[in-house]
Image 1 (cartoon, one colour):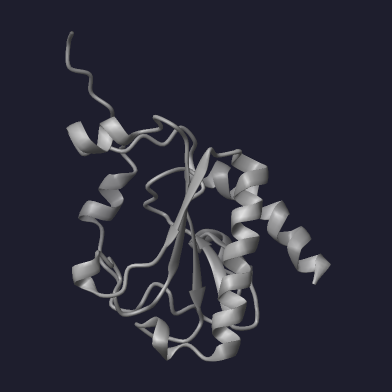
Image 2 (cartoon, rainbow, N blue to C red):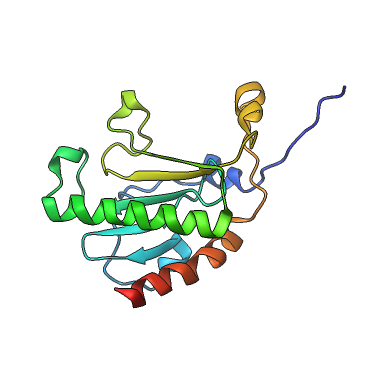
Length: 166
């Protein structure tokens, strides 16, 4: 059996590109860059954004607008709305991607694995049996079968419909 190479050239932008000085989760009030930033939905206390360096296609994050680093810092209204949107996102992911499972969680603090520890965010990661676990374990590689912009285009109508239902 010969070794196969999988290319992910889009990752080079992250690896070599400039790292922002500002928090990537502190959104401007202006929504003109939402599509570029992969923001799918804005609610009153939180927003839904795609992970632009995802573990799996459809990897979403639900994030409060307020720059807080710990779940205990959320107000009751923020907490309730975030959980409502975690539930909405799980439903939408089920409709769009039909995953066999969904990982939902947050990492609080660097020791827990938080990549951006300063601004709390929930992750929702669709999963399929045998999806890419061997890749991550054996070769520290992730395989994404769909381009990020295509995933955004598939998900966006569901969030537009969600907004009209409120």
